[in-house]
Length: 395
Image 1 (cartoon, rainbow, N blue to C red):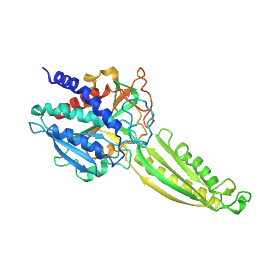
Image 2 (image 1 turned 60 degrees about the vertical axis):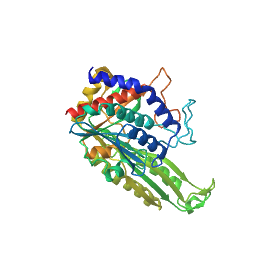
Image 3 (image 1 turned 30 degrees about the vertical axis):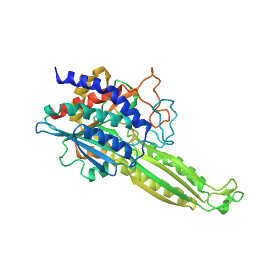
Image 4 (image 1 turned 90 degrees about the vertical axis):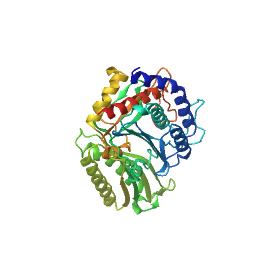
């Protein structure tokens, strides 16, 4: 029997178990750095498989090391564990049991797929020409668990040679794999801005400085940071996602707070946008006699896939799903992903796994209260991870 046929048979054998694991995790979502139950489930399964397990990395992170029979490279596989502050509206038996928390981005599937890969690879242990490190990371949705895990040595002892990650993707139908060389996800910066004016009676606006009017001007003007300050071929976005201020209908507002995000894929553009942002806000506030306080923070860097590793994963995807089911977008998404920190240190690939099913009514986007995924992709994700690991070891 070929090893690839054996892999498929093992996956078929464990597929119902994978579905149950995913549904259990979905029922019990946990937010970033609070993934205590999730970590316990993961550690228990990895220990039962005979892996060397470490817990409590970056608070709730888990790492399992599978040592092959032969000396060789160390391949790391990563999954994120955290959920979101969303109230689930799906009427399914495995709906979230924790009010206000939901796996609305598929991290429950990522954990399940990685556990499935561990189940398969542990049964092939005697034929592995190298080691596999399974990294279960907290807090991808924020503030970010990849960086503290790296700082605590997750890529060392033994040092990792290549790393892989995946994301279930509702923009792609189940059965498709998305691959992109170079930049795949944007850098993610954040800002908290307080516009400061002067309060007055609503009937006497000349006696005050209207912070709401200033905020409106700032919001509109910030869009020119992209539309009029950047090369139009450069992908970038400035989004104000929250705004709050004022006292009541007949009082000129003294302060308005807002928060948002700035995203791009080009480091030079990232720096330019930060400078332009401050110039726009400062100019508007100064001209009107107001002031501001700005907390502008760099977040996740741009995620850059290694071209050679992407080519290798493409070979695997061709064998698993066929050329017609491989999608190679020419543009990155402006979504963010802290797997980027791993790729700054180790060559690797972060690929997309289609999870939408029109026939099953599974079409809601990520970060939506109706988000769900076609569970057939769990087995596909395991096969992609396992075969990609073996292929990387060969290289």
